[in-house]
Image 1 (cartoon, one colour):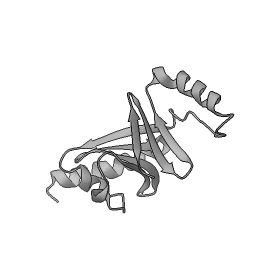
Image 2 (spheres, one colour; image 1 turned 45 degrees about the vertical axis):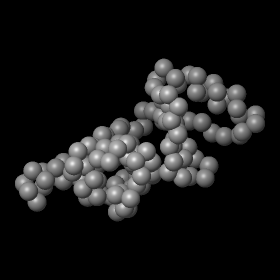
Image 3 (cartoon, rainbow, N blue to C red; image 1 turned 30 degrees about the horizontal axis):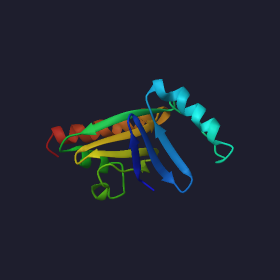
Image 4 (cartoon, rainbow, N blue to C red; image 1 turned 60 degrees about the horizontal axis):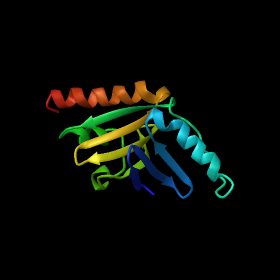
Length: 131
């Protein structure tokens, strides 16, 4: 769990023993859905397009890790570069991707976006004030 596999433009994240999150450009959508249908006879599964459910926030720079710790209780610093995990940002379930030492992506459900953004904006204001 937490491992990310990449092949070209497609990323697959193992979220649990039997749960994966697959990211791909829109142009690959139909091919992935068709491949899922073709594999169903040998590997029963549910393959759902949730591309409109989430918004991706990108956080980068020397304060990105600190900004994320304002809402995430887990030890983000120990996350390996190239890994990802489902976690909670305050009360919102998110998927956090660590792309580089100081570069993260956070997939947030649209309904939680105003709450998450408000907390991140507050953290940014505190950094600007030197707190």
